[in-house]
Image (tube, rainbow, N blue to C red; front, side):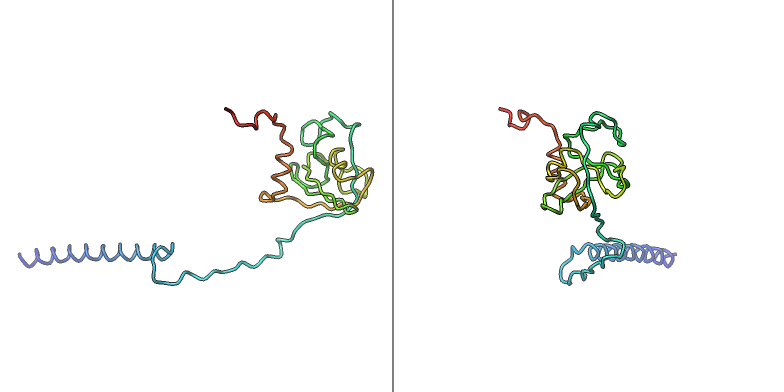
Length: 175
């Protein structure tokens, strides 16, 4: 009888010991993954190679502008066209896309939001609002380049802040 009790006790002890060793192994393996243990070198850094699909999109061509004739009409995005806002019409870019437009003659840059479809006339790549055309120094037609802005682009942040219509009194600290 004592023999069975001894075996049971040693089996239970062995199980507890095995569970403890297993827990220590798991803890060591977890600390090795997050690098929290000391004494070993950090894992090597693997640099990702750029894929062929991650090419930068841009477009170069002729821009025109539209203004008073379309003022107050509904755009493809559903909002009312305002020639004094920094917007544009593009044939295929998603509505809401922000673009950096550069006049290739004088190198002026403007940040505009695509809110309409167009241009209607063949051979043109973008129709700018009157405000955007003035910012670029475009009196009629002009050769421009278009680049979409990413969410981390500082130009995008500046363009979005410039489009806010907040009274200056709200920007002053309250006393």
